[in-house]
Length: 313
Image (cartoon, rainbow, N blue to C red):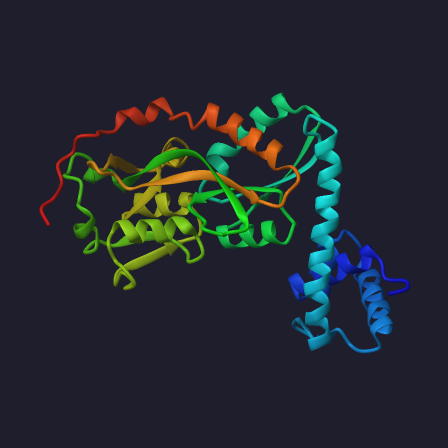
């Protein structure tokens, strides 16, 4: 189509993703009038509206839906052509868009950044923190190159690379220190504090507590692990957090931390990327570097007991 540009496709894809002219313009680092003008030019080329406009959000028309599918294929192909050129030049350099889940980012991201900037000084890391579902969508659409998530993902288009396994621990009010560690079944009867829906760690905690598809009756939610720990310190219930979060999150909270008996609840942290990415060999190398460093457990965490009895079922 004469006059169609990649810039217009990028603006249109951002509008479809954000469903709002202002947010799409901000994501593209342009003014809202400039983005609106580009969309109108696209609509003029097609001779039909591509979006339905209203005060709250934007919806794609049927023609817009068809264009979005093709636009994403084109934009992904362009990204991979750029990666192919980068892969042919030797050591990894330039932009690397890395996503990471919120229950890992505050605790492990500094290790990743330090390792990669030392090994690849010409690397320009662009970071995005989001829940797993959002990161996987960005990977598949070419908006991310690599993501750190809890495995498995079981997406056929993605390569999974395991980094390490870590345990979950129980966080209770400080006055509960020394009490027997409740079993998974006993936790079902307690007020359990969990992350909001959308976090994979929430699903893993529920799975350990053997709730199945049923939701806990006495459940409270928080937006972050830090919030959950502070709620526990205020006597509002108990929670599970990953081992790597203990040192940072419990330092200023009036809580006690206990390890579960074997077999302990745990998760596998790994990296994922598109199998079609021309940088796959370099991303595999990144995975190997991060795996070799691994998660270094805070020595302060050794102060809580590994040998607490379990309450009878």
